[in-house]
Amino acid sequence: DIPFNQESIDFLTALSSIIRKSKSSKEFSDLATFAFWCRKKNINAISKNYQSSNLSVGRGWVLHICPSNVPMNFAYSLAFGLLSGNNNIVKIPSRNFFQVNHLLKAINKLTKKKKFLHIKKKLIFIKYQRNDQISSELSKIVNARLIWGGDETVKLFKKFETKPRCVDLNFSNRVSGAI
Image 1 (cartoon, rainbow, N blue to C red):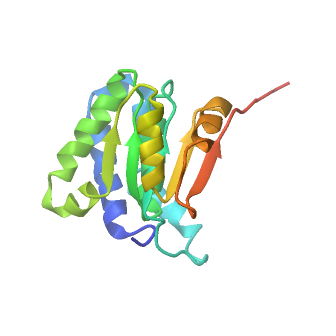
Image 2: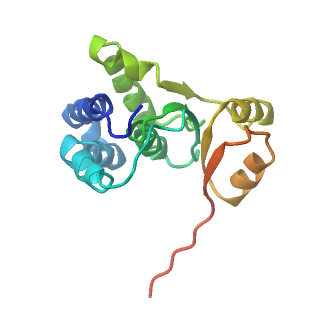
């Protein structure tokens, strides 16, 4: 699909609305922050940065390996996957987080609507404990991988066979400092 297509923007806008109206978004600041981030006004502002560039279609199927200790990281990764015109296989945190379950229920509710049936076909959510065989098999079938989680996770995934033109975006360890 074309990046920033209207269907993806409408889907994220509807998702934002559901979350912002829920009581849970007041209890979990990361859920509220995501809802605020994916509202239509913000998505349109982000898209303006890319209007002048030569955007083509998405890469195809993208595997998102998200960290297990940051509940809402998968949501941002997924949003960027949709906005860039991709189909998405998203590994959600293996730990049980309320925010993750709440967001997945909202996504499930939206993808049952006729308006978002095409979006439903672009989303696969998986949850598994670290398993090299599953990760290896998924790596073989995708066109790109977003690998979050630090140096060890990146090293592990670099060992898995991929398609020759598979693109990896690695988010390895970071160190911050302030004086």
